[in-house]
Length: 296
Image (cartoon, rainbow, N blue to C red; front, side):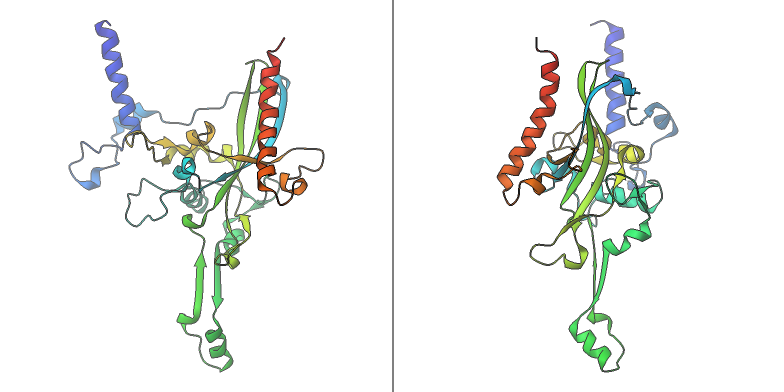
């Protein structure tokens, strides 16, 4: 290796370390300096989500829309779930739900939707009823019936937090790009799913998607937020990269079909094993299309 190549290698190493590691951690004179990058660092960074290439409709030889569940009990999906307690952890680490909610509240994610078809827009005010529950206990009702002022201790308040998120549902398109000659995947939507807040403490509460986000609209904020990397905490991965590269475990619960995009559970009832096998069958059917393209 000549001197020029060595210098370029070293410079690249320091550049990437500066990009991914916690900013200014080793050069900080006080805790207030941690996370604050200089103007030169920001100019060198050019840290943006990798842009999607343009795909002409005529280049799509085959496509299939699928809906998947990402269950957060699985260890591989933990980076999407944790941390759930932010009281004793740095502000640079947040769960995916906290990132989505924060940016919906501050307006950086401008549009949220009622379903995965993105036909009906919702506002933060529209979903407040799904996120919070205020109830009066029986003792409180007795107090009201007696004509007394309701005491605060007899009011139950419950709010959906990151700890209550059970799974994420995603919608995406598998397509065969004939110009590139390969099967590709494009993530289109994501929704956090939690128990119905009104029955959250019951034994088997119903799970409801809180809202749907059109994924390309949220890529900028998801790129700026980092998930924890178990292999190297100095190189966290952005939520945008994690989801686009499919570094999670999910299973298909619906595909587009002639029966109105019916779910697997609608035609395979009360049999979780057979539903998982049907999900694998749909995956294999999609992936085999690419293999069959190169069979002679």
